[in-house]
Length: 91
Image (cartoon, rainbow, N blue to C red; front, side):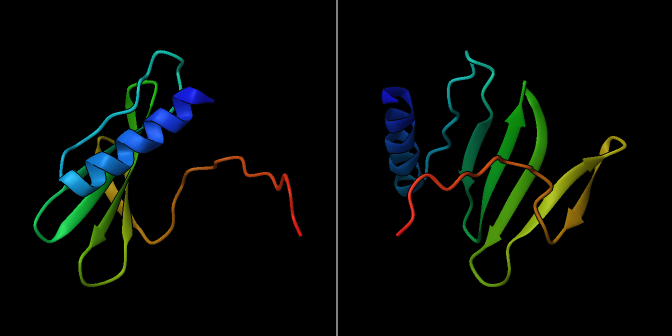
Protein backbone atom coordinates (compact mmCIF):
# COMPACT_ATOMS: atom_id res chain seq x y z
CA UNK A 1 0.00 0.00 0.00
CA UNK A 2 2.80 2.40 0.88
CA UNK A 3 4.47 1.70 -2.45
CA UNK A 4 1.33 2.78 -4.35
CA UNK A 5 1.04 5.98 -2.31
CA UNK A 6 4.72 6.80 -2.87
CA UNK A 7 4.45 6.05 -6.61
CA UNK A 8 1.37 8.29 -6.83
CA UNK A 9 3.11 11.15 -5.05
CA UNK A 10 6.20 10.82 -7.23
CA UNK A 11 4.10 10.70 -10.39
CA UNK A 12 2.18 13.81 -9.29
CA UNK A 13 5.42 15.61 -8.46
CA UNK A 14 6.92 14.61 -11.81
CA UNK A 15 3.77 15.73 -13.65
CA UNK A 16 4.03 19.22 -12.19
CA UNK A 17 7.80 19.51 -12.52
CA UNK A 18 7.92 18.48 -16.20
CA UNK A 19 10.16 15.47 -15.46
CA UNK A 20 9.57 11.98 -16.84
CA UNK A 21 8.90 9.32 -14.21
CA UNK A 22 8.86 5.53 -14.47
CA UNK A 23 7.34 3.36 -11.73
CA UNK A 24 9.40 0.59 -10.16
CA UNK A 25 9.19 -2.61 -12.23
CA UNK A 26 10.49 -5.10 -9.66
CA UNK A 27 7.07 -6.73 -9.13
CA UNK A 28 6.16 -7.08 -12.82
CA UNK A 29 3.58 -4.31 -12.45
CA UNK A 30 2.71 -2.02 -15.38
CA UNK A 31 4.84 1.11 -15.77
CA UNK A 32 3.65 4.54 -16.84
CA UNK A 33 6.25 6.97 -18.14
CA UNK A 34 4.99 10.54 -18.36
CA UNK A 35 6.78 12.93 -20.72
CA UNK A 36 5.83 16.57 -21.20
CA UNK A 37 6.50 18.49 -24.41
CA UNK A 38 5.50 22.07 -25.20
CA UNK A 39 2.20 21.18 -26.85
CA UNK A 40 1.60 17.53 -25.80
CA UNK A 41 1.86 15.15 -22.85
CA UNK A 42 2.72 11.49 -23.50
CA UNK A 43 1.75 8.61 -21.20
CA UNK A 44 3.73 5.53 -22.20
CA UNK A 45 2.29 2.30 -20.78
CA UNK A 46 4.73 -0.63 -20.48
CA UNK A 47 4.08 -4.18 -19.32
CA UNK A 48 7.12 -6.43 -18.75
CA UNK A 49 9.31 -3.81 -20.46
CA UNK A 50 7.25 -3.71 -23.70
CA UNK A 51 5.29 -0.66 -24.83
CA UNK A 52 1.63 -1.67 -24.99
CA UNK A 53 0.13 1.77 -25.57
CA UNK A 54 0.97 5.48 -25.68
CA UNK A 55 -1.67 8.03 -24.74
CA UNK A 56 -1.12 11.43 -26.36
CA UNK A 57 -2.86 14.40 -24.75
CA UNK A 58 -2.47 17.59 -26.83
CA UNK A 59 -3.00 20.97 -25.16
CA UNK A 60 -5.75 21.70 -27.69
CA UNK A 61 -7.84 18.85 -29.00
CA UNK A 62 -8.91 15.36 -28.11
CA UNK A 63 -6.57 12.76 -26.58
CA UNK A 64 -5.69 9.76 -28.75
CA UNK A 65 -3.76 6.51 -28.38
CA UNK A 66 -0.89 4.95 -30.29
CA UNK A 67 -0.94 1.14 -30.26
CA UNK A 68 1.95 -1.05 -31.53
CA UNK A 69 1.02 -3.09 -34.62
CA UNK A 70 3.50 -5.13 -36.73
CA UNK A 71 6.58 -3.13 -35.72
CA UNK A 72 4.84 0.24 -36.14
CA UNK A 73 2.23 2.31 -34.32
CA UNK A 74 -1.46 2.64 -35.18
CA UNK A 75 -3.61 5.55 -34.01
CA UNK A 76 -6.78 4.78 -32.07
CA UNK A 77 -9.42 6.87 -30.34
CA UNK A 78 -9.86 4.29 -27.54
CA UNK A 79 -7.55 2.65 -25.06
CA UNK A 80 -6.70 -0.99 -25.77
CA UNK A 81 -5.67 -1.68 -22.15
CA UNK A 82 -7.94 -3.84 -20.06
CA UNK A 83 -7.45 -2.77 -16.46
CA UNK A 84 -9.56 -4.49 -13.80
CA UNK A 85 -11.89 -2.10 -12.00
CA UNK A 86 -13.97 -3.05 -9.01
CA UNK A 87 -16.45 -1.05 -6.96
CA UNK A 88 -15.42 -1.46 -3.32
CA UNK A 89 -17.74 1.10 -1.72
CA UNK A 90 -20.68 2.92 -3.17
CA UNK A 91 -23.24 5.23 -1.56
